[in-house]
Length: 209
Image (cartoon, rainbow, N blue to C red; front, side):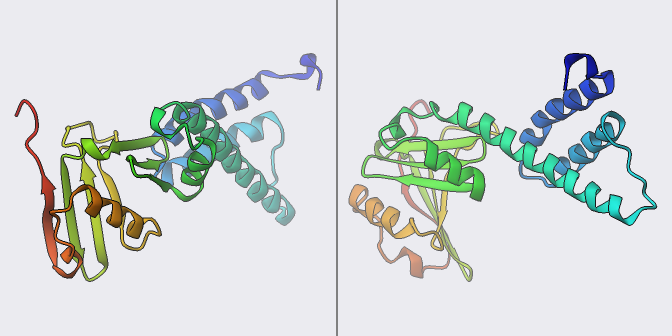
């Protein structure tokens, strides 16, 4: 396509698409927002490239295909932003490489990096990491659905910023984390998984409080 063939409607389509990438990322855990952005972009697509005939069955197939492709493009753009934003976010993980942990987190919604020195939870555009020496509180919750551990440095942050490392016993990393927790905090009761309810397994005073 020559530059002379680019119409204002085409520019509007791409402008609306890239502008809506930001709110789709902002509300990344709400499927309603990507769907609304997709419909908005599709509306501008029909003005720029192709106007379907809603009374033709074959056009409905192309409508579905185009909408799916728009959602895939959102996903790819989101991954690019996620990777650029996250690859230098925590210096502690660079020894292992940032690509695979970030990619797994983007595809699954969450992943963990657990080592002898630090623990990191990665979600889409949210990362929280602690060295074992930074852990100020460990809370456990046990119910009929299983056990959950919460690690925090006890620093209050905005809700949009991930500030608690959370892992359940259904995660494959749970046993490794549990073992490292006992190594770093030997006073913790190793039978906590058999005790129903919420419990503080470890807590230390916060400086300045």
